[in-house]
Image 1 (cartoon, rainbow, N blue to C red):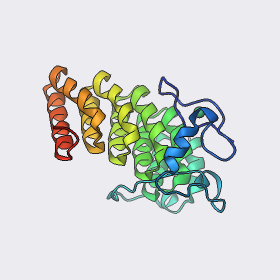
Image 2 (cartoon, rainbow, N blue to C red):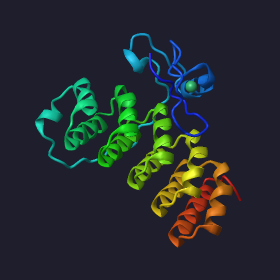
Image 3 (tube, rainbow, N blue to C red):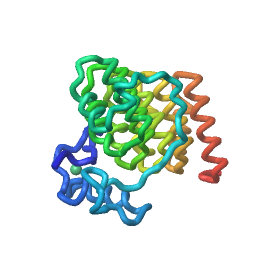
Length: 239
Ligand SMILES: [Zn+2]
């Protein structure tokens, strides 16, 4: 068993255990339904571990990681990479593990990447975990990225998290982006949140984006909100 994949009202991870046949507790069972709605089937008894519970998944474009990876990471199994991400004392080694997990896009890494995103001491490792969770593309990547975009002390990690949420494009992430859009003290995070909302494209972003376009102290953020609103208009989400 393990922790539920839901979030509490403060955007921290739910600390209930998940139910035996789901990644969610009884309080968050509605998320299980939303997660499964697109692929219909959901649970598949033949898949091991977390994989049998994962729901809908997006596949963002492949990224060109133009980088000579040391063999010890390239040739390691996913299980070995996960163990090393959790235990290796060297920041650079854990960063490599997260990078290779990002390139493999193995959904088995969602839980360990969330844990590393939440607690790794290196902001570079946490940032790589946020990108990896976006690339893996499961619905269950959303809560980890929301938690980091609200609470990570490093603006680069919060930025990577909101960008990943925008690339994933799940409507369910939109409400969680309003906080970083309106309240983050770092203008780049607000700027990327506006872009992410434009990418996701839900009509409930119109109000908050209009407000930011009027009131943000940064001209660049105002401009990003204006562009996101144009994107929503092109998709016919408002007049
Ligand atoms: Zn829960």
